[in-house]
Image (cartoon, rainbow, N blue to C red; front, top):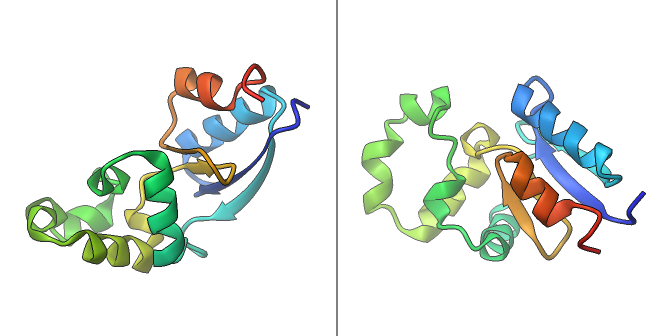
Length: 125
């Protein structure tokens, strides 16, 4: 254990999420998982997470997801306010790019092994 504890919003059937979880555990990170579709983060919590991630809100959308495509969000997001985007993400966990991992200060969205090693690796306590 490297002493790190994180919370991961994930979808257990998602291969990327499972790979991310495996990567974290291999690095000795203790992970609490939260099912993203059953318990999406609230709008207030999302606002906090987005700020901590340093990413634009639109980077939080799962653009390859069915719900995103069905709602034709590609055309709607450019004209939408930040507040409306956050409300939309909070209303449906399937719209959120996954997995989302946070330790309360840092946040990563999606899974890239090199990013995980850099942000969550044992050298960064």
